[in-house]
Length: 112
Image (cartoon, rainbow, N blue to C red; front, side, top):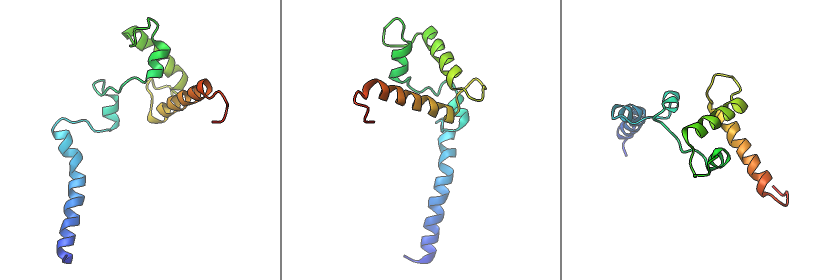
């Protein structure tokens, strides 16, 4: 391949990579920016261990009241900076705590 052709190809690839988020946003797709994470329409699935822990009526899902209770309890325990929401670092601490609880519950021989 000629050097000039290679330079053009590299330029096109880099340009496409830089332009792809703008194209996605233009067509209404949400990226993974902090704004999208805070958007209520950008919902993630509630982990099963949280549903099981806070599902007081045992219907397999969280009612609005159960969801608020779970949210308040998780914020109280893991919202280190007190801003009323979980940063990615704070979410990681929730995940780590869940992992530790899982190991404590199911690792009966203590070999974890």
